[in-house]
Length: 289
Image 1 (cartoon, rainbow, N blue to C red):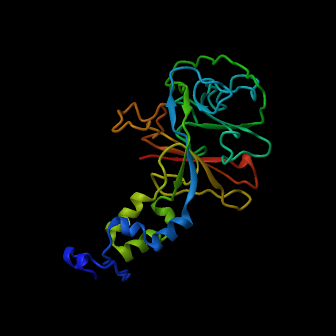
Image 2: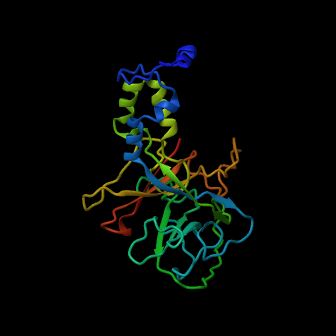
Image 3: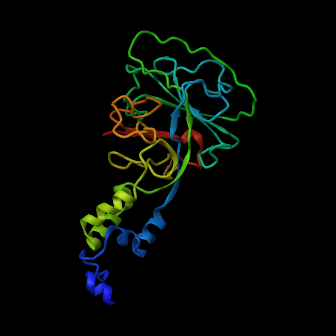
């Protein structure tokens, strides 16, 4: 130990594997042990980061809300359970998001939602969403899009249509939530102690936003469905209530996202697919606080 280390009482870092390590949070996160774990679990996600613009966004653009590209439809799409006209939620083009799941020659992903609070399939265990969600894939290379007038729903309780929002996509390193790290978090606590284990989870976890790729940011227990072919389905997309625009802190109850959809109590809807079986195998699951 040098003169200045003795003078200022610098501690030697010893990894004694007994939970009594003399590590600061920054030193802990820089250990080879933690680097190896994060390298093993790290996945890339793209956060969509919707931003309200207050004016129509081009129908040939990846976006939230407003009017979609209707070229794949013969008429305005309605819920097959209650016949309510669907709310358009989101569309992604493969040219913008090549890492998103697109089957075969399809290049357009669209997500719609039944707005009817009283729909027979709302909060259904069968469709695993607070409101029934509809996933569509199309191959579309047209330079113009169809237009359909949205039918007026009958009287009742309906969610408002999603306003036009542009996307401000951002690549992010994504990590599992606590339960998805297998026994790693318990091992970290055993070796480094509870405080640094909490530091690890604060630093490395699944992003709680609408995103393509990465890990689901479960608010309850993890859920990973098995396909009828016997293979585990892969998580590929998350639709989240918590899409607060960057720079907004402590949002008001009605300002958690520019798209305006509240999934239960600040919940998420997770989408899975068996890539061997294709888009027919897509299913969703939801949870909330």
